[in-house]
Amino acid sequence: MSTTGDTLTARGPLAGRARVPGDKSVGHRALMLGALCDGVVEITGLSDGEDNLSTARVLGQLGVRSERDGDRARVHGVGLDGLRAPTGPLDCGNSGTTMRVLLGILAGQPFEVTLVGDHSLTRRPMRRVLEPLTRMGLTVVAARDGGFPPLTVRGARPLTGLVYASPIASAQVKSAILLAGLWAEGETRVDEPGLSRDHTERMLAWLGTPPAARPIHVPGDLSSAAFLLGAALLVPGSDVVIEDVGVNPTRTGFLDIVAAMGATVVQGAPRERNHEPAADLGVRCSGLRGVEVAGDLALRALDELPLVATLAARARGVTRIRDAKELRVKESDRIAQTARMLRSFGVAVDEHEDGLTIHGDPDRPLTAGDVDADGDHRIAMCANLLALVAPAGTRIAGAESIATSFPSFHACLRALGAADAL
Image (cartoon, rainbow, N blue to C red):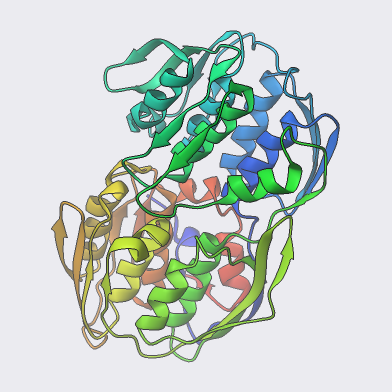
């Protein structure tokens, strides 16, 4: 279980300004595409979370040298023909994005490689990425049934271009196919039933094809900022500003949801670098109401839906989350895990195959939670937020997983006024 130092409480309003780590989705792509440039790529704003470190590490095994200095990195790109066969397995750690998107690059390499990951990653299916890539020319040499890691694959060159009608809207599937297209003959295109994150398309437009070395700035991660905004919405009297947050419209579903719940998020003047928009985001605590979240809105806020459910626990009325079955194959089964986490705090919640129904009541006292995050950083952070306003005694197992995406999470909350639980 976590120590008391890992669990914070709010003894008064949260206030002030904070910065969050760089968007790890943009960071993964900056590192990977930087590796494929012919020259040095300067990256600023890069997260020091374990997921981005996993990507940098496996690229190093493929012959790409990089140096880190805080949130800055210099990637010595080797061009489209410069990657070399690794001498051992590529360990992607806990990062599904590293493994899935990297498969697109490996599809165009004329050598065999094995990809492995931690216990959580070995439970996450890769078949949806492997299926279109095998149509382009990737050979799957060995994989567990269902396409689960570890995976051994062999690439080819040239690949065959693919016009792919994806059955789901997935930025990871789309990115893998588009990157494989860099080594393909003919057109490569992905058609989706909905618009998933478009960071890869924006970065390819910035760097060109083949990619040319240009500086890349990674804006603050909206998924991380959402937790600090959520903390302010839970703690009465709070007023916080999060600086330089990415506001790519494919990522702002959370902001639309909390606006529908009655919160006012003030967005500063937007600025754009390497085609990625960013802005300062400010919020004050206000009463929340239950909402309906489904369809495209659920897709655009997929990673933040456990947080939406957490806020819904203190909103007035019922919140229904649907069309989110994809949450069941994240770092954990996030539908089941979110339901268990909320119930441990005394919140009434119904679990469905594709979502949750949360019976919110701001007047119902919470209980101290006893949560096993099962290695899922978002579940651990959600539990930490409810602990801010719950009675003392909350225990969270697996809180160390927060370091995969937001190593400074507790430090940011302390800077805004949260205190260690006694």
